[in-house]
Length: 69
Image (cartoon, rainbow, N blue to C red; front, side, top):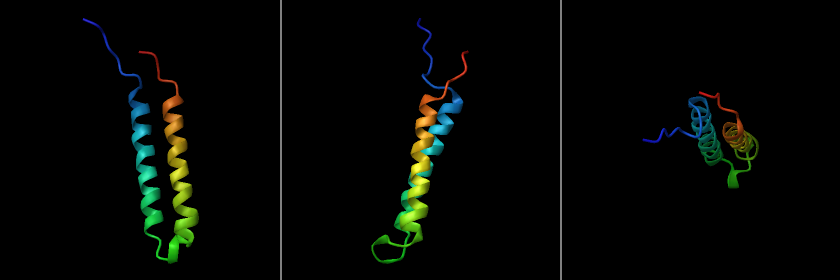
């Protein structure tokens, strides 16, 4: 039998799911903007910043070192 291990640790997977949640939350916030064509504070500032932070968290989760077990 081969001893297969997951490529990431539990911490990495948690960060990946948190990043995905932030990305979805950012798009939802952008979609909730009530101004025409999404030109309000939620559509131009808050939503994109949250989405970008989600993508940054995804990259960190992928490149973060997992502890050797």
